[in-house]
Amino acid sequence: MGEFTTGILYPRKYEPKVLTALPKSRQPYFHRNVNHDWNAFFLRDEWLETHQTVQFLLQLSRHCVPLLWFHDSEENGWGFRLFDGGYEVSSATISYSLDVELAEAEFGRLFPHVDLEEGIDESDDVRQKYEEILDRVVRSDRYRREVGKGITRVRPQCFSRLVGHKQVQQIRSLFDLQLLTEVDEETGSSMLYDSVDLFKEILGIEEMVWVNYSYLASGGRE
Image (cartoon, rainbow, N blue to C red; front, top):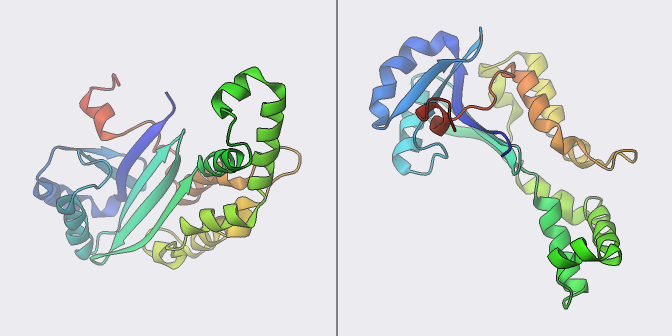
């Protein structure tokens, strides 16, 4: 199983306010120190699926506490939601499976009578055709448009409450769509798959790894 990390980060200087407010979340939680600059708390509602959880975060952010919900699934992708001043001010979702989904759909359109899953295992010809389609997909305008949909609400300037001017500019560069999707001709990959590590490095949250509410609730035995 690949890494699965999710939690809500905030600057350590707001720790007293957060510790006072956490019981108002009305759900089990854990609170941890991440490093010298950051703390994090982990709610049972890990994916912010309920209205109650989102309202709690909005209310807490209204008291001058910027909150960064961060998630990283090694197999599926990563993203964040930034709450500040009582609003959700920025967000992003980066999918690692988008290229495969588009390639499989295109393969099905071109070869409707071929079982792709079986064909890849049993036929070099099918495997080659699929790889050619995948290569075209990651270079296509459609793929870039789909990736772009996940970063339309990125507002780098909103991170100024969390980091300095240099880091804000780095975040702006990180979410440049052309740079994010440009394919390296030698490796056949793009910065998309390195973006989460770059994001964590920019913010200084490299220690936010392999941790989530379920893991902590299990005593680290997940």
